[in-house]
Image (cartoon, rainbow, N blue to C red; front, side):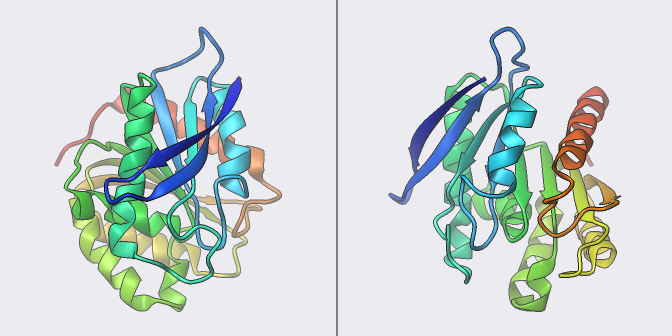
Length: 224
């Protein structure tokens, strides 16, 4: 696996740093994974740091990038977050990826869910959302907006909630998304032993994602 520090530029002129994890030669599946971090985080911490090597080893080229609100404790320009995701998607496309899967953690899940509605880009057919819905407790206005936009999601999504997460109600938040994203096939996993950041269940999270990527690819595109 080769890792390269990269930078992308958004359509509205933001320069964002990141790391590209190329899968080993001969193992590449032609599917890229864009990793979107949550509040207070960045491209080199948390799941955005330790998931890419595990996914790249199985043939998925990964790109972790900073969002424009990286390292901040408060939301910033949520309505413009689609520019950041778009820039990441375009970078992976430039690497020759025929499909891009969006993975998001924590607050980043809101950006992923709202992406299709905010951007008008309907090319993302698979999403992985880990630690979804904590925003309801501190910015219910954003959560309500996200659920309103979830109806424009298409394809398939995997929601992975830590069964031991004490910072949110894992099952109710996932159920709210399932109801709101009626035209997307949403699969929910409550990961035993998983906490808010999956610190002690890193491989278990990676394994669940890899299994779902295989299964969802076999099902093909799901359209309403």
